[in-house]
Every structure is written in structure tokens, then in C-alpha cells.
Length: 551
Ligand SMILES: [Zn+2]
Image (cartoon, rainbow, N blue to C red):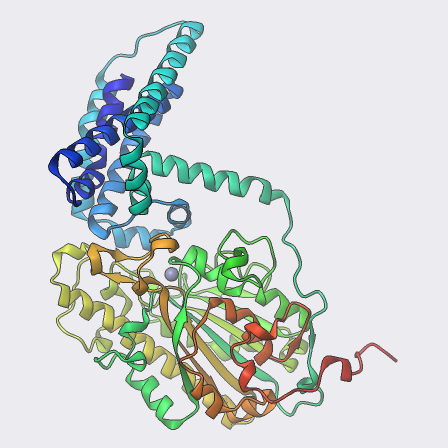
């Protein structure tokens, strides 16, 4: 049964891949040769894999799993132009019921029926022949060798063509079902294995609050809004022609809000970007890998501040594990929550009480609240906005993106940005009230975790491997708002910040910019990566302060 299944998995299991190769430039003969050699290579590799699994109790479940994987992958490649690399796979593994529900559709069912149902039926109705285990081992070994032999032969015969194809079309290697998923799962497991045993490496063990905390009139309160799937080129503040951010534009006109127009993300999906954003490491240093270090929140907490993570999404990806955190999942606030999920404004509900419940000593020094938005999470964009906040009509109300005309899809997406604008407006109003009442010196930084494709080059959603990700998935919006009190204590000049709003910065700068803004002194802080530092007046250095414990 190995070879017929291998042939099925390689050929009907890879329709998007064949479609892509067939549609490429070059002569017909060349494309046919590429298709045939690639298909035979894959048949051999899959046959080797199946031979490895060809044990009586294992074969049917394992082969069924591979068939279903190929069918699901086919659907997501067709629908969204997705490819399956290790970070995409990690994303899938960490998904939650809400996200899965948003992806279920009739076309998914149809693809599964088309790609997986016929071989599944064939696989389960055929009797398995009983063999002795030595005999089975010998057959399996022969199968592995024959499969690898075929794959090797085809690789040698078409080496030049396949190698140049892979070089020029890096995405293709992540389109090869189901090998892409087997590879990604193996990589993920190998990555996790040794790290389970290791504790995270501490960061900023020397972290202390700077001079601005000595006899401070008011503690600082900083809100960090981690946006979801917002792309900069649909942000009105960044030049988009539609009014997606009217409220932020008003705050900007009043002068205290600064827009940063050239910000790039660390990854193209939440799983990579959120940990990377809080990581002390830059992307180049490995901030985009599974974290081995503590993060910004650990350092802020170690310095003595109160930290709180509020999550309106599928979790903080490990970032908030060691600080107080709360999820909105179980909330049922009328008007803000429906169908088991809540609009982002729910994070402002009862926020004063949540902050009041934090450690009072820490709170007296200062507070950092992170709000992790649902933002513009697709593909069901229409679910992210309440009926009262849908200025762009008509909007796509399907998660099968190809069901909708492009304009309707963009309307639904732009509505999510308009709702984010509303949510940030409410948050800013709350912060301004706090500042005006004299209870805190307040500030807000908003930036998105990554962007989104809305059909450009046939791509939808996000998660394209970073090295060939389109600009739409990595260019993200970012704004900062600082109350007069926070500007005074941090010595930041608004004019200077505004003048530098178009400087190219990235997620790499977040860790250091927040430490700088919050005046936390530590060896882990690197001024060169503090995007705000060029606009700050020189501060009293840590060395000028007496350590609190020294007699
Ligand atoms: Zn995300």
C-alpha cells in the first residue's frame, strides 16, 4: 500500500505546488520536466517515509494523518497563499478554538473530501497482510531504500533545474506536502526538547529604577498596546487615503501623539513577533528564535515596577508567564463580548480595579500595563468590529476570502483598523484623565506585531517566511503618546520626536526604548537601540544615586 499512497500524496496532495510550477515562465517542455522530476522525487521521499511507518498498528493512523495534513495544507495554500514552515507550524500548534473556528469553511470541507477522502477510504477498506516482524522489517528497509533511491536519482537527474528553482522560489520548498509539515514538526520538537530542561537566562539582574523615581510626585503609568495584524500602509497616519485613524489624527493634531511611520516587525506572525518584541535580543541576534532569555517584563518587574498583561487574544506566547496576567476569554460583558470572544475595548473594563489589585509597593513606584489586542486578526475580519464601528461598507462577511470582492475584503479589514483607532482613543482618554487628576504620569506606546496581505500577489493573511515576506506583512504602524508629566520626568522633547517620526526603526528598538522611557537602569539597556533616546535630555546617571540599601 506504500507506493500507491505515496503517489497520491505526491501528486493530488500537492495541487497548489503543481499549479505554481505550471504557471511559471519558461518553455512547456521545461515545465513538464520540472513537474515530472519534482513529482517523482517527492513520491520517492514520501514512499521512504511511509515505509518507515509501515508497521501493522501504526501504518493506517500515520498514513491517515499525512493525508489529512496534505488536504488541510492544500486548502490553506489555495485560500490564503500560505506556506508551511516551522514558525507557521508552531503557530498552528499554539492556536486556540476561536482561531480554528474562524478558519472552518465549506471550501475546507470540500478540499478535504477531494484530497483525503478517496485514499482514506481505500486505505481503511483494504485488508492488511500479517507478516512476521523480521519479514516486515526487511520489507520496510527495502521500501525506505527504494524510496530514497528514487528521490536521489531524480535529484541527480534534475539537479540544475531543481536547484535553481529552489533558489529563485524559496516558498516552493515549504509547499511540498506533507513533507513540509513533517519537517516543521521535527524542527519544532527538536527545538523544544533541550529547552524544556533549561530555565531562561536571566536578563538585567542589576535592574534598578533611575533618579526620576526619587521623591517622585506621581508614579508613572505606561500602557503598551501590542497590536495584531495592523499594516502601516492602511493607517491613515501613515498616508493611507481612507480615514482609518480619525481619532489618532485628532490626538496627533493636539500635539502630544507622535506617529512613527517607518517601523518594521521582527516576524510575520504572532508566535515570532510577540516574544521578539519583548526580547533583549535584536532579530539578528536571534530575537526571532524560541526565547532562551527573560524579557522586558521580567526586567521591569525586577526593577520594582508593577507589571500587568491583559490578553484579548490567544495568549502572550510565554512573555507574561512570570508577571501578573489576565485573559478576557471568560468575560461576558454585554455589548463588548459575543460568541465567546470580546472586542478589544473590553480590556478597559474594570482596568482601575485590576491595577488596584497589583502589589501596592510596586504600584507606588510605577505601573506598566500591556494590552494584547485581537486587532485585525483574520480571516474573519468582520468579527473584530461591533456593528456600531463599521464605517467602510459593504464589508466581506465570510472567512472564505475568495467569496468576497477585493473591495469588500479591504472594507472589513479597514473597519478593524478604525476600531483599533477607537480603542486607542478610549485608552488615551483614560490615560489623559489619570494624568489630569494628578494620580499618574501617563504614556502609551502602540505598535503592531506584524502586517497582513490582502490579496497582493495572491497572498492573504500573514506568516510568509521573513526572508521573502512582502512589505505588507512587515511594515507596521506605531504611535506614542506622552503626558506632560511623563515628558518632564523622561526629559523627552515632542518636537524632536515628531522630527524623527520617519526614522527607520524596528521591533529591535522596543525593549530598550521602554527601559529608557521608564528610566530603568541596567547593563542590558543599550542606548543605541533606544528610539526615544536621541530626544531625551541627559539624565542623572545611576552612579549619581545612592543605592537604597547603602547606609
Ligand atoms: Zn499576530
